[in-house]
Image (cartoon, rainbow over all chains, first blue to last red; front, side):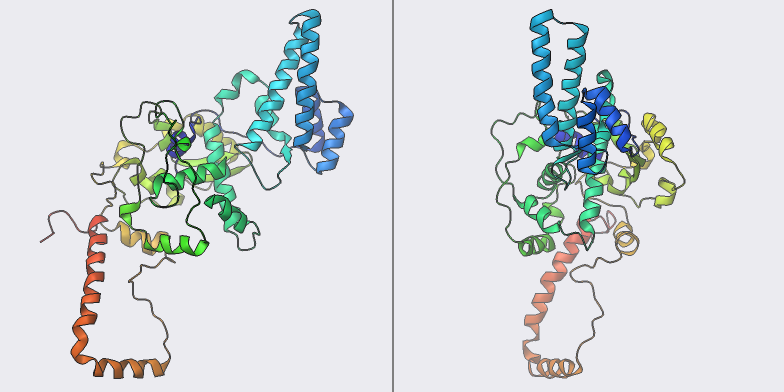
Length: 165
Length: 229
């Protein structure tokens, strides 16, 4: 499969910056969630403890998405579009993007936990489009196919069924 | 998404692999190609896929399916970037020169991976290189000639493919040394003796396989142009 395939089949960007993150610690994850998603410090700690890594759960993202949405609406009706409202809207967009790339581009076998490391690309919302999401998708596919090809991978049957759907 | 991508890729490049219906609302100038395919029930069991794959020949493989001109998604030269790609803290080789036919070119024998994507590189370097991807893309010389039928390869490519790239693959009619029980040999010799006068039946069977083989060889471009006689 070539980058041209990704470009034509999915209309994803090829040109741009490569995704270049390294693994982050739980503390980093908590820090990022608080700064970029507006998470409560205690809740963020619960997420990383529960998922045993720099991750959070789908359910948590869904919940704070709704909460933040309501909060910013309430603030807007009260004071109009202030700096604070804009900040909250950015947070809403980040939560949504994190959720979106995880359920579309980078799905894995864990089903319901999201790697917080991708927040790195949503810190500055203006440059999201300059990353090469097409290359990342192809790389991810290569990796998953590698995993599937291992003789001891129990999920082979599952993937084949999905392929036949 | 990566599974949808893989599925769409299979539908797009291999005929008869499951998707027959096209989505009626699809518009080439607007929608990603993956939306065209309406997933079907597929071929059924893994065994049926195996049979299908074994019987697959070049006529049912679509090498370059996106056609020209491409209004919705013009071909970008960055797709010909040939080196390492990076995704997070991992790196993979990306070498379009190994699949030139998918770019509508005549397949040539690719360089050794150590030469086209040297292993001595670090993650930060890959990132900078990709920012200047066009400097590391395949040159027109490396791309070579346009393929007329889409499946051509240079002389010697098929041999290279079986000897260097995929040494574990065997052709259907490739002689494979297989130990046989000695009593079978004796029985076969006996049968061959008694069936001597019906030998032409076996021969016609063999001939049809030779015809298939010649066809495969010709469409692979193994036979140089002008040597058909």
